[in-house]
Image (cartoon, rainbow, N blue to C red; front, side, top):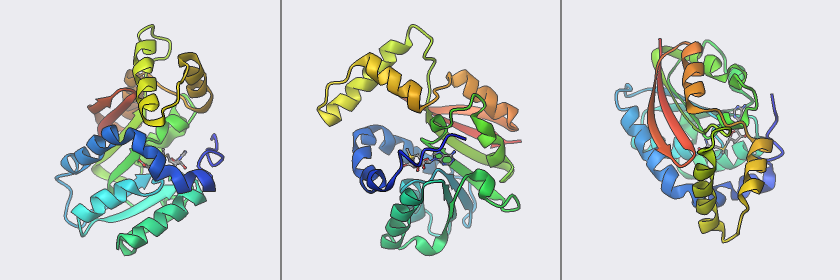
Length: 229
Ligand SMILES: C[S@@+](CC[C@H](N)C(=O)[O-])C[C@H]1O[C@@H](n2cnc3c(N)ncnc32)[C@H](O)[C@@H]1O
């Protein structure tokens, strides 16, 4: 598995929330939809947050659902350190367990009502995402749901450059830094693996999810709600 801890290092982790501001018009909408998608969860639901990072999704959901309990897993000790501080500040720490590692490090007997995997999968540079969807499915209760959101697209499609131009324009608007399209494309190729949305949907089905409903797209970020068979 490709290690991303060089990206999510101590310095970047400390400024992650501030740098995410450039995506806030997109991410606010995405995070706001989570509660809607998870509306039928029981009052004392257990939620697994894969690639929990600095814990933004836990803070959002934890405040809205005072009895939910969360397990956050992430390979970056630096992101988890920021996450733990934030959960403490927000009064949520006692409802959360944090695990340094990958999904396979979450005990398989722990069955969750729902799992979130937000802005993570594109970092896994493996054509089958290294089995992450199946590993998540194995930790869900029957009919448990996975919400995944990831940067997606078919980079070989001639239309992709048009999508990329809009993506770059968004970054430029927030950073005031001119970016060259081919430079951004090379960076995406080097650091991430974008899959065409249809391929992600096929992977989710192969991983044992009965349905993979697309609920979100904003520029290159796509989101699916998948229900375990
Ligand atoms: C862009 S951050 C997203 C954090 C958070 N989910 C959010 O929406 O703000 C991506 C996180 O995924 C973690 N990550 C990278 N590869 C991973 C993997 N294979 N399994 C789980 N987490 C991973 C990184 O350490 C990082 O904290």
